[in-house]
Length: 485
Image 1 (cartoon, rainbow, N blue to C red):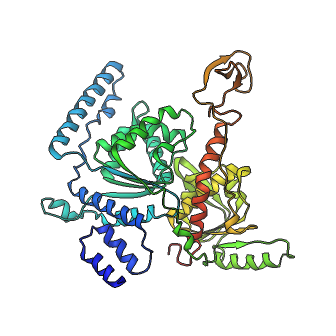
Image 2: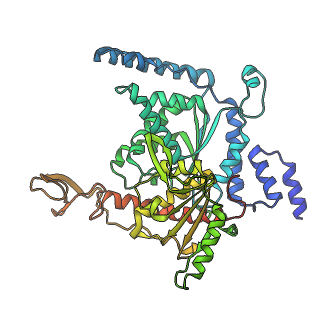
Image 3: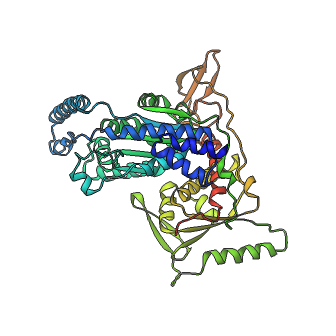
């Protein structure tokens, strides 16, 4: 009966994503999951609609370069108004000529349920046009041929901020977002984001403008996330300014929930690749010596001339590596996670090294928010780059992250904002106070929560999600096949 059922499935017409998924099921690389089958069908529908994707409109806002030459604010305002009008009529013409672009997809759900796996199958099914195709666009084609990019959202936003930084060096008074959106659209009409999350106020403030321009350029966005759209940037400063982006996301993408899928398939991976070592310093050092020998074998020797190497990072920054060879870097946990490092630093390290060894990883809980946040960011960078991450810790892998949730008292919508002239912690001259409906006063923080700073609330809320994702990924990254050659 199983064979008949499989043959019946094969006889039905399938899109490329479902077909690729069925091949992996038949090869026993994955187990059939109804939620994944349904998601594959939605990806097939999007794949089919890409065949009618309108081209990227020609940029009409290049005037910023010429406008910056003029010192007259009136001429600059007039130029921008003309460009805005031209852009409006161009959008109308493209809509009339080609129809609306396909709607993107925003897929959210727990860790390890197959969101990124299915998105990667979809991404692989979209073929990039070669030179011959570009020269013969009139040829009929049953498969979508568009430019594409698949990137972790952390890395994408770092790229955007770096482009803004570079543009502002020569055009300090101009708006960089329209120009950068046009660049991104020319490079890729399909943008696939993994782990879409917003925890940085700088990202939150530019996302609506950036994505508005990307959509105007007929870019199709597909994103996976552990958060629903309404939970993005939850508790962040000035979140009211971010809410229009959430509305735009709902209006322009199909929101697909996998919240009912609770099976973490990553945890079925056998973590037998020798990437996580339990260090027990209480046994006369014998176990530690054995672990040290294994780490030395993984490290594989020292590079000729053991000088410290300086790794270049975006925005003109650098990160120092003291112990390294051509393929591996060796750190203590304090070197990477007690220092003010971030995603840009970790991404640069992962590009440079195939293997990263980290000793002395502590158990991470709510008392180590900053260190845990950096460690989770490092895991994400290693996962995306397929860099092997070798760890030693005094606690088992399943106890490395202490699960917690941030529980704080919220007074949003229950207070009136006033300013007291008596001074206080917020300022040497004035402190911002909240007066409740009952007439009681308390000091206001950027979160609007009693006794909770913005950094504490944002980090705690984000890590509650990130811990589960990081623990899941570490299991998968511990398999024998993990890493890049």
